[in-house]
Image 1 (cartoon, rainbow, N blue to C red):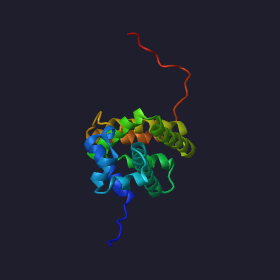
Image 2: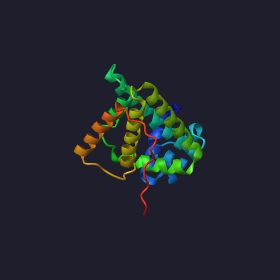
Image 3: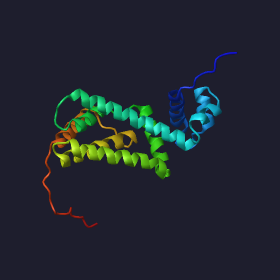
Image 4: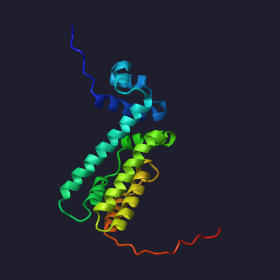
Length: 195
């Protein structure tokens, strides 16, 4: 009798991402993931009881990988002011690859339709913002830099806009500049232009 094959969860998550890229998150099925991974549906169900649980695991893995990269780059900077925000900027130094864009677009569609999936990302964003405010020399400047960086990433990951490389690098330098900016508080509201 042969040894039972040990199913690697990474294989299942890789297969799930491949199905999301090929078919979209809306068409992700446990059957399709099992077929892509070359395993039985029962093996997928053993670890991920539902499509939602599988999508949640894909999202959590992406978030964990992103956090690990940011932490590694932050640590590599040593003792510099606002290192966490600067590590985030470094992590975004290259535009996303096409497969990453495809996964992001499809996962965003899944998040838009599922409050439970969204709640994990909402908590992660709240944690990111709190950490940036706590660890930056200019909390408001770093917050503005974070918002600008996230805006850049959303435009790119959702394939809404692609910047020429030289302009993208300039934007990142300017976001880096914002980290240390000390915005002057104002009580004035922006004027709304009449149409």
